[in-house]
Amino acid sequence: MPSPYYIAPAIDSASSFKDNLFNERVLFCTGGGSGICKGMTEAIMRHGANAVIIGRNLDRLKASAEDLSNRTGNTCIPAQADSKKTMERFGRIDFVICGAAGNFMAPIAGLSENAFKTVLEIDTLGTYNTIKATIQHVRATKGAYISVSATLHYRGTPYQAHVSAAKAAVDSLSNTLAVEEGPHGVRSNVIAPGFTSGTEGMRVMTGNKRNKADGFSNPLGRFTEISDIANAAVFLFSPSASFITGQIIPIDGGGEHLRGDFFPLSGLCPRSIKCTEIIEGETLMKAKGRGQGN
Ligand code: COA
Image 1 (cartoon, rainbow, N blue to C red):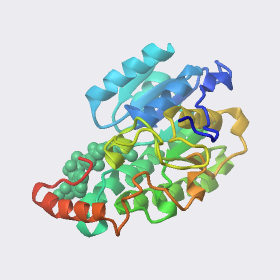
Image 2: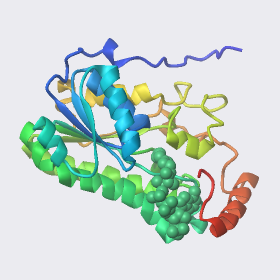
Image 3: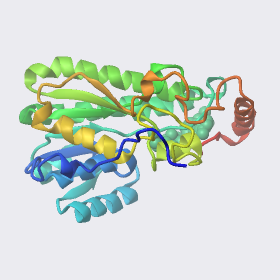
């Protein structure tokens, strides 16, 4: 039966922004090989920018860079770790997306120190390292940063202690960057996606059983789409956002304001049977080094 409620449509950024908005601009994006960050990169390239995508898996990066170049008609190259290759190839960095992230589901009682540290290293240290590697170049262009965070840490989200701690720190880094670098003409904002269809994060958290919003509620009636996040990124890097800095912007259909059904697996709360199964699974996992999600 069709929903009696309004469900927000997902739109394309080209319907709101000029095609050549980012001509001559260069994007440096960590995590750009897949998912949300690849979607943001594609949208920014569609508006004229060239891009460098950074990640751990070079084969995937190469394939994604080729795909992004073909789909947008602009140039995307893969790189690992530093900004040298970007400067050699393009001579400037205007926009930076700090987006590399890792996630798996595990209760804090079953989370090893190394597991906790691994996610903090990818998300928090990764964001810090990206800022350090690019800040001089971004000052030169009076450019802007977007860090990709989450809404998990606004409350206690079960099995996400590691990711919540990492993302809280990412929010904090971005705020400091905004305050310190504003006088140099650099802006820094955070995008906090809600549960986003078709991403690795969704697969990890729901086993891809819940890619549709059946029974899951937020005020706008569906999960986040990658295009919702891409559109926000286009806006935040555009001149229209030139006075917006130090902000944390959830793209979750208003879900952060709801107490019920925040988590897409509504049965998954610390008193549920499923939780017991996970904790038991976690104990078993200890022998194998893996829990739910991987
Ligand atoms: N449950 C509990 N612990 C886990 C785990 C899980 N599902 N997956 C990994 N760990 C632990 C490992 O056991 C290890 O700890 P230990 O040395 O105490 O045993 C530690 O985390 C590091 O694991 P390792 O596999 O060596 O790390 P990695 O850097 O290769 O991979 C991730 C870690 C997070 C990147 C990997 O799990 C991953 O690829 N996840 C999917 C990516 C993703 O979620 N992207 C979307 C982000 S929103």
